[in-house]
Amino acid sequence: MSLNESFTGAASRVTVAAVHQRLRAAIFDAELRPGDQLSTVQLAKRFGVSRTPLREALRMLQEEGLVQAQSNRRARVAEFDADDLELVYSSRLMLSSLATTMTVPRMSQADVDELRNLHAEMREAAAAGDVDGWQALDRRFHLAHAVHVPATLRRELEALYARAALYRRMWMRDRPYQLPSTDAEHEAIIQACASGDARAAVGHIARHLSKIAFSLLADTTPEREPTMVRTALQVLLNQSAPAPHNTARRDC
Image (cartoon, rainbow, N blue to C red):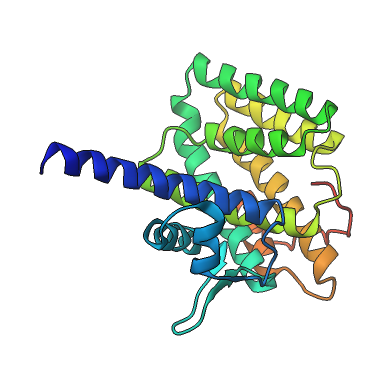
């Protein structure tokens, strides 16, 4: 490979990453709304790029579940799907718990300090009403208690977080992200990690994530029984009896 080809390839990767991030932000900020068709011609003009990196960015978003595509039809922004929401959260429950179980025994003081620092920054973002800043910190927080896992598992967790975040942004845009109960749940996760108690950490994470899922489903499809999420929660908490039925309280 020549030097020029090397530079061209690197520039192409940077362009794809930049277009991917811009499209992702447009979806999360509702510039592109659920169900909107995505014309590669129009988007290429909008972002000032060729259609090649745009197609690759759309493929990446499709893998994350943020874009839906069918053969011979234009891609479109993912729409609400209660089945998918349940699958996302039940999968996230199980994989986050697995990653936390693997990570907690290997956490250093620096790892615990990182959790505490992120939590402090989240409180500052919440006090300032910075929803986007809080969301970015929340993502980092939940990856931080899963830091000592294989890269493949980490990528899967990141993809699940992105899909879960889309549902939260789609249906809870004007509601606070950071409520006192959320802050307390994050604090409990930190304390369990600091004490090296992986089982307690998993319990706190399972309850935290399932509560968000229950709230979203109660808000969007109140007639639906969230069987997958309940089953995942019961497995993780080693419960034989059904979990208490969650009300429509919107503590996210």
